[in-house]
Length: 164
Image (cartoon, rainbow, N blue to C red; front, side, top):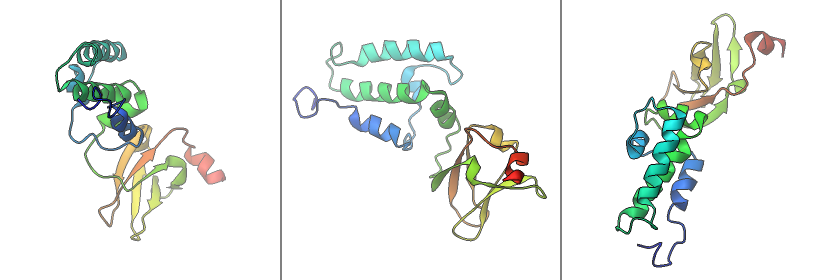
């Protein structure tokens, strides 16, 4: 493999860079990579990761596919160990996201009882309080094909929004 030939000391570096950039999973089922169900506990995720990492690490597995398998296991672990990234992955819908925004960037409309973010096309992205209870939400524009991801870390209440 390239890693063993000295061409690349860390074959997983590109996987980890992609994870950090929130790039799509390209259809891979991260739970299947670790051999666990999607409702697995944090402990089960950690246990499965350790077993798969050991089984696929090049120190223990000398097959030509070991480096790639180890990278996939690392990528699954990087996402599934973090509650926020796991929630985002669980909501995956393979829709390309135009932009990520904080909920605080949205405007609350009390007459409609919803939150709005204006799109470049003149349309808008809408979400109601029920939708925004999720930490991460993907919403489509009402006029074009763009989608945004709304991050709801520390949301102001509608009353706080009106006071601003």
